[in-house]
Image (cartoon, rainbow, N blue to C red):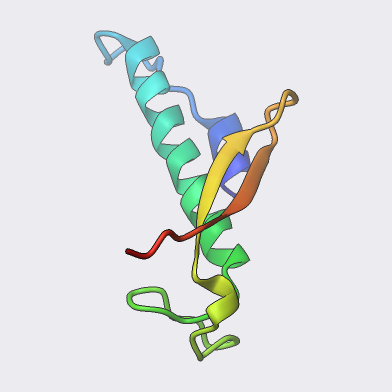
Length: 86
């Protein structure tokens, strides 16, 4: 859904002083939203403010951080990074 929204977004309606900046900023917001949504869907547990009805319990397997990056083709890659608890 977010990718389709990004593809359709264009701000050059003649009323914006710098439409390129508005498009760039909107693209960044949509990119961040995509990463947040994908990470939330990937995490198969409920913990703190992240609550899922299909995974209602905490899981020690998910005591990790999810790091996000883009591969060379621009596809989102999520990696589990172990927590270092001190």
